[in-house]
Amino acid sequence: MNRRNLRVTLIVWSRLLRQAVMRDLQFRSQAWLHVVASVGELATGILPVLILTSYTGSDPAIAHTAVLAVGIFAICTGLTDALITPGLRRFDSAIRRGELDLALIRPVPTFFYAVMRWIQPAELSKCLSGAAILIAASLTYQLDLRPDAILATTIWAFVGTVAYSTFWADLTLLAFWVRSIEPINDLAAAWRSAGQYPRQYFPRTVQIVLVSFAPAALIGSFPAEQLLDPSTALSLAPVVLIGFCTVTVVIWRRGLLRYESASS
Image 1 (cartoon, rainbow, N blue to C red):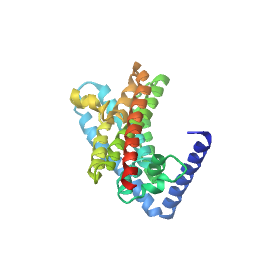
Image 2 (cartoon, rainbow, N blue to C red):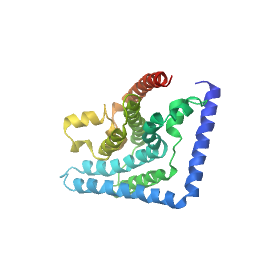
Image 3 (tube, rainbow, N blue to C red):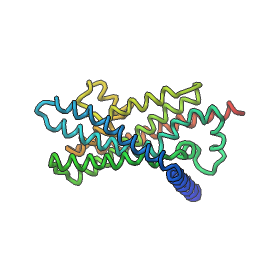
Image 4 (cartoon, rainbow, N blue to C red):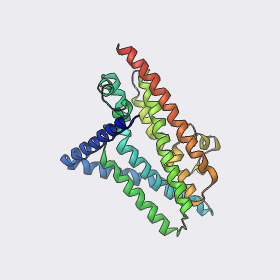
């Protein structure tokens, strides 16, 4: 992407964001409904975690990780649900209805425009709730958070957010080959919720899947572990990021070729 295309892409994205904010302001009741629903979803998500942590025995680290994971999970999912998830859920219908043709003629990256044009700013309320949980947990448990731990958590939360977004995108791009993928979107959303629970709650095989193939743990429990005990695994973050993005790019290009040949 050259400098001109990057400038145009940033301008388009800023206008899409402004349009989304104006849309929410025009329908204030709908925006508040989204905020209430987001906070309610977070509350229903933290309740099972609190119940499970009451049976963790004498290991306080698991209880601390559980609450911190919910906060980090809320921040990561708040960002994706505001910027990326709405577009991924609509991608199936965009292909079936031919709306992708409109994205192909835009002077911006097609995948970027097709996914990012359905921004929902109200979902960012999850980020505020998640930040409040992190602050409350740090004060309640009197955690001594070191700068290197905060840095490692931030990096892994970013990597996990991108990794799971690309994983969800890979599933969504199956729309190039199958008739409808609506059940797959529901599956991706349901699997993502596993990220708010400590990995110790799952069998070893499931833990491996949660940090590799379907990286739900990278948007919650794994960054929370880094906040308490940063490890040398930080060196793997660029590898994970590049690997997941590369797979998505390959699937996108192959799917786009199929879409063009089908519409020609």
